[in-house]
Image (cartoon, rainbow, N blue to C red; front, side, top):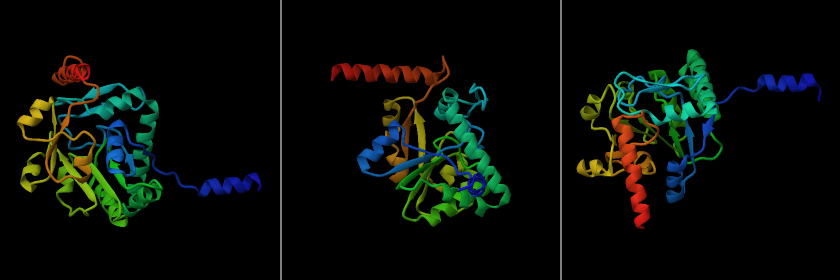
Length: 256
């Protein structure tokens, strides 16, 4: 084949979104439940219009993290992006393709996602970082879920103003993430919610189970807690809580 032939082939190839593999937490679910899981993510903060308590941004070029005015604990994905230029490249690649497709239509965006989906998966976590940043973007994921009724698509979201306007398909499972601008909608609609806690004792006092592997988010129907994690600002309450948790875990390990 001539070089011109190769050029013609490459010119017809459309760029696709980048999907990821489970992290250590999600691997626990894949092992326990025997499911094949993949992940999708966008830039943290920049695509989170409803975020408040966890709002943080990693600079696209330098990775420097900036917290929001009301941030109480830092989004773990902002910290992850700060450490990894390759991750920053991947999430911004995804956002740029999504934005470009949405300028065309919701269908174009849904087609982009559909044509980029991993070949083999049972469960997809939508937005390890990021959120539904517009109604049209949410509509695209609704369409993708409808096209794949045998798959589970799940996410945490603070974009509750958008979500409240739509009847989601059963296989698009959204857990309301408390600590955002639209928490009032959680109570109004009685949605399943997740709450970040600073200790196992706090979760127990609230009567909430801690989700250690995302199975509550993907398959559960009850409210649950998430134990504070990630890299937290030095001197913050969240940072102190992490130190306490690590100390307790070390003591338990020594006692075992």
